[in-house]
View 1 (cartoon, rainbow, N blue to C red):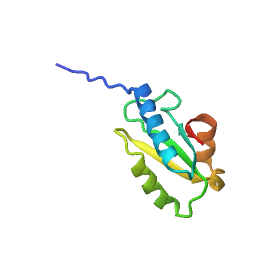
View 2: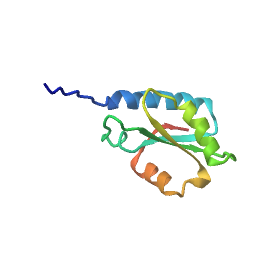
View 3: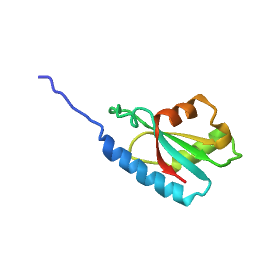
View 4: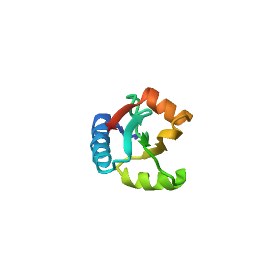
Length: 110
C-alpha cells in the first residue's frame, strides 16, 4: 500500500514572523536602514524547502562580508531556513541587492 504525505508552506504566517522579527531588529539597531524580503517567499511561490531571502541594508559596516553574514544570520534565527544578505549603502550595486530591491518588499524601513 502506498502512502502520500502532503506538506505545505504557511507563507502568510512565515511572512508575519519575518516582519515581526525585522521590526524588532530594526528598531534596536540604528545602523539598519531597510530590511527587504525577496525571492520565492516574497513572490508567493514558496514551497516546502524554500528559504526566506532577506536583504539588510545598513549605513556602514567595515567588517568583511562573511563576518557580517554570520552575525546577521544569528539574529535572524527562525524555525525555517533564512538566507541573509547584509550590505552597506555603498554595496548596493551588486546583482543580488538590485534584484531584491526590484522584486522584494520592505519588512522594515527607517
